[in-house]
Amino acid sequence: MVGIDELDLPAASITKVAKKALDNNALFQKDARMAVTKCTTVFISFLTNYSNESARSRGKKTITADDVIKGIQELGFDEFIPRMKDMVAGKRKKAT
Image 1 (cartoon, one colour):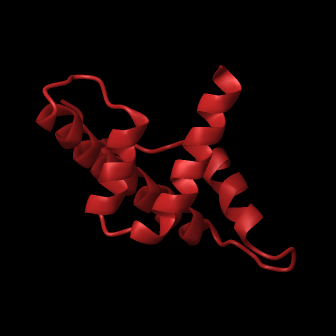
Image 2 (cartoon, rainbow, N blue to C red; image 1 turned 180 degrees about the vertical axis):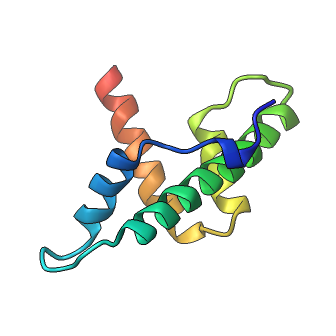
Image 3 (cartoon, rainbow, N blue to C red; image 1 turned 180 degrees about the horizontal axis):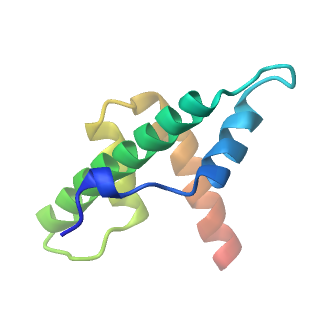
């Protein structure tokens, strides 16, 4: 099994997302990009773990969007849940 220290998301993708959150005059130092990349990797690991626990509590092996939302709640990010539910509903509506 691979440890969390051995995993990193693509730095270019993280930088692209982070820069969209900043104003055009903000600078993003290399060590800040590395820190955001590492924190993002850890966050996804925690979220996946909580989501997996939600799926298993239902007797399932497959993580659903509802499990991810439950994971977000377990991590204490309740303020994001309404927006996430709206995004999931929008994706489901487009799929039908």
